[in-house]
Image (cartoon, rainbow, N blue to C red; front, side, top):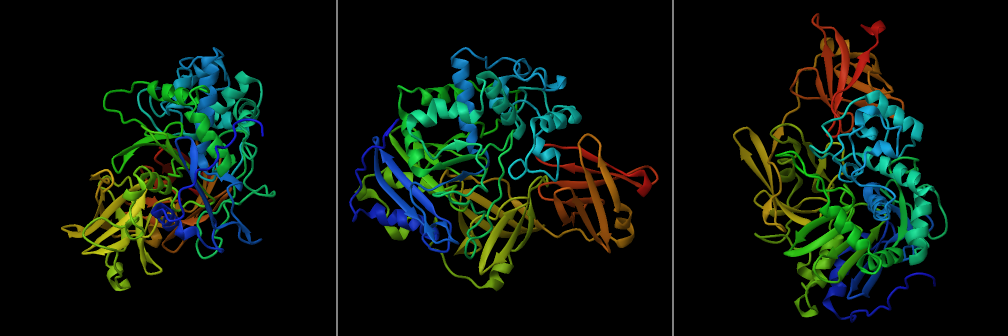
Length: 559
């Protein structure tokens, strides 16, 4: 076989307690009516454990194997883009501190100061092109290069001065992909195939493959297992951004070995990119995630996770020793923690492995218990943080408490341990969630048990606004045309309900908040209707975390 051969497995003994512990971690996928997972543990350069669970294709009854290929979600491909940029820089074909317009002159003049390094670290200030259009998703839609640059030109401004802050933006890596292709003279896939995938023998791996393409050995990706197959995630590769990676567990084991191989220098390149992060303005927070490499401490162990913003960690490496865990699931749930949990198991000697009964045990005060739905309902409702920038729904689903952030996927069910306390696994950490009545209502707090630190702001339960009246919201109805974005939104009113729709955006009911003329939705957006001095509705404005002030002007015929 050409390229890097897999090391012969030195499998741990069948009676090693870590075998059962790993089975317990992946038990939710060990079914014939569920998407599946594959896991490999690489220690001192040898595969010491390799297992497969669940199905590659539920409808055809095809079980998953370590050669099953499927799409990696969202931003995981960025490490390949970043490495390509770093290699081209090392070869003198581009400079990390060069202005991007030197290589991509179509970038608008207002972004003339943006450098390649700032794109790598999300410090450009460029608006996320996928958020500018409420009806467009860079993961499920397609956009040509011409459309991409037209969107940026029309928007016409940066969110902050380049290098002053960081903000995750799909625009940054869309530009880097274009830059690599301009400098190398071929597609990103051509570059990766010639430099990495071919020499390493990664026959199942490619960049830019469509999720919808079905072929032997390929598994479709599901948004959630649910009861059966769940909903198959639609993904179409696009000339810019939303860069798809298709790979298999065995290919990722080869990739992990290459990253560890000093002769290839890939690991050193990643470290140089991390060390080369641009300085920020005083007080500015740095984006934790840039090019898919995320450092953290788990149960006192320094680890490096290769993952995306959704927490899908396909490779977890111990930072100080040659121990790695490669995990692939063709669904989301658990992928934020599986690699960390397995790595922690193998960081100790077999005799120190946690027994099966406590592998996934909650923190004190005790084991998971069962409580009636009536008690769970006491904690259900809508919650938000103090500055109202984050909101979430907590609801009872099939006898369990579920936490769903606005615009996101539900987390794994909260597991009760008594006295208003619950445990949950997220992003490789165990959290203790506590509900307590406060002066202004029910308060939810989170403690990161793994890191022994706060899990974030307290959330306060609130009651949705009751201000909307049929007379007031009737004035919203009409057609709204994007001012600095392409697109049209249509607002319809049904009694006190306000509904919005657009090209590619299914009609969605907006949820009123306390502030008059303001709503939550659609999806990740906050909607505000503007009125003029005479009280007439003249525009609606959308705000999101990555872009604010997306204004749509109401048609004059509707005013």
